[in-house]
Length: 219
Image (cartoon, rainbow, N blue to C red):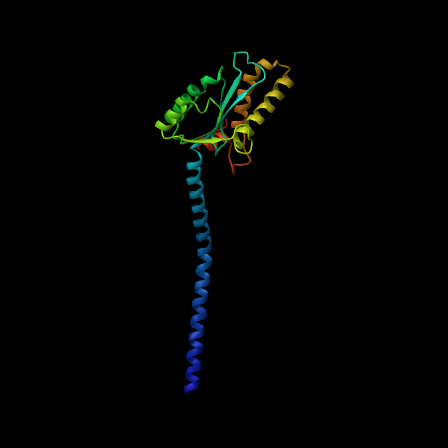
């Protein structure tokens, strides 16, 4: 009888374990979607945190055009948000105007948006290593990243933009049969088209929406 009692107890214990196992398995099936949702939320949080860091870095480059613009400009200065790839283009008449252009661009970011420029990536051109620009960046806590000049590998974002803008400007002027002296107007149009277009480096949205964090209402 003792052996039978033990078998009954073991059978009862096995049934209890099996029942608890089913309950645990059932509860785990309910927990899996919650765990997945939690992981997705954590990934989104880390991406958003990374975006804030990346949104503060702006590569810049100065390009010299072969033909003088109708308004007297021969150069083009571009600033690019390293995360959203949104671009700003300015047309200085001389390289010495780069410092004043950067001051205006920095004031625009700090007063008109919630973003703050903390890192400026440029080449070692004379317009970017001037004492005035170096002192201004040091006073405002802007980190400087100097890369090799005319090196597409080191300054890939700015070099890609320069190449893309030149190709689009040439296409627009050629198709419209316009003189090369209007490259400045075509350049501004090309920048606007790019900023209102999606990019393969972004998961969703267009460049301007990703940079501002606001969706565009199309009426």
